[in-house]
Length: 217
Image (cartoon, helix red, strand yellow):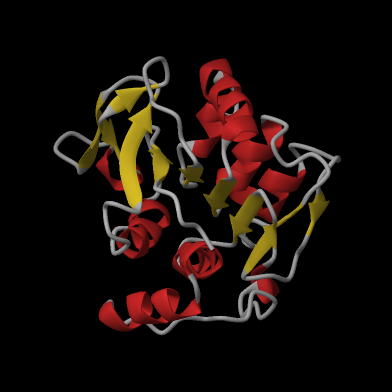
């Protein structure tokens, strides 16, 4: 259980999936600020469009820091989304993830965010999962990862990866349980009126494995 203040960096990029990011952040935001500080980080500070905000006038989230001036981060939170594909070819993103994960206590991803972690080498030697419908996107990035097809999320110590979209909220509560205790995690879920799927191995969507793989071309 953590007794020292921690800092979480929520990593943004154009085309990120909103629920991947804000589901977990809703849970993390209920930890008192003297215990957890949350910063929004992107390649450059400023507004970053979400997957639904790529069109003019769509929703954007403001990054407090760019990669070059981001403070020390104890937890990295990386969402997935349609923007994952171009970011797989972005050396600035991959370098930031590789470097900062070495100093973080926990690096966690939601959905196709694990594809980026795999491409950056962060998941080498670890167990991990990803979005089920696009599972091949993640597995094709590295053969040094033990990919787990049936899992709501996978906690392998310093790296924690969640399945598709809503699973990130369950993962966040599991991380809160690890860092601040079961009572805090349960109180957080109750305050949000959220039904926490507590069994990481219970995956109701494994039957959807790679059903949307054709979208990758």
